[in-house]
Length: 277
Image (cartoon, rainbow, N blue to C red):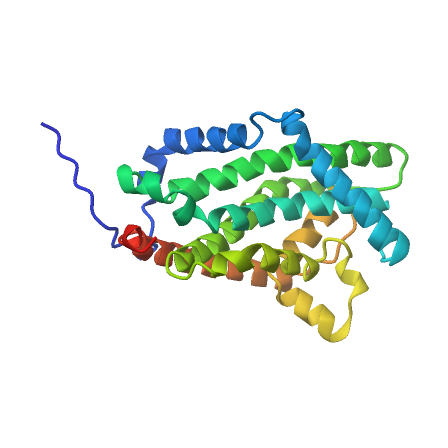
C-alpha cells in the first residue's frame, strides 16, 4: 500500500516548489475557475475586462490630462493611460485577491489537503490572463501610433516584458499573502486593503510620468518598488520612460525580500490558521 506523509515544511524558503509543480493541474483548474466564475451570468462577460479599463482611462484623460494637464512625456494621452492602467490593474488584483486567500477559502482549506500556495499562484495566473485582455486596446492604439510615426518602441526591451510581469506578480503576491496571513487574526486589516492599494496607485507613476516629479517627491516615488517596472513597461512599449539600474535593482531587491518573507509567514500561519479564521 502507498503511504503519503504530510507535514509542515521546514524549508528556509517556506515553500516546496517541487510540490507546487506536482499540483500544476490543480493550479490550472483554480485559474480557469476564478476566470469563469468572475464573469458567469453577466451580459457582456469578459468584455468587461476591456470596458472597465477603457472607461477608467477616459476618466483619467479628462481629469488628469484635460483638467490637471499633467504631462505624459509626449506620449498620446489615451495610450499613456491605457498602458499604465492595464499594468497597475494586474498588480493591484494580485494584491487584493491574495489578501483574502485564507478567509475566502477557509472551508476548502479545512476539508482537503493541497499546497496552500496553489491558490495565490492560481490568482496571479488568472490576473495575467486578464492583463493580456486588458492590454488589447492599448496594443491597438500602439500599432496605429507606430504606423503614423508618433511613438517608437524600444524593440530590444520587449523580451523583458514577461520577466517584468512575473516580477510584479511576485511582488503583488508577496504583499497579498502577508496581509492574508495577518487578517486571520486581525480582520479589520482587510478593510484597509482596497483603500491602501488605491493610495499606492497615486504614489506610482500610473497617471503621470516619473519625469514630472522632482526633489523629495521624486525620491519618495523611487522608493516605491512598483515605480521602476511601470516606467520600464512604458519605455519598452512606447519608447518613453525614466529608468535607472539603481531603481531596477531596488525594485528587484524589494520583490525578493517580500516574496521570501511572505512565504515564510504564510507557511507558518497555514499550520493553524483554521483555528483562528
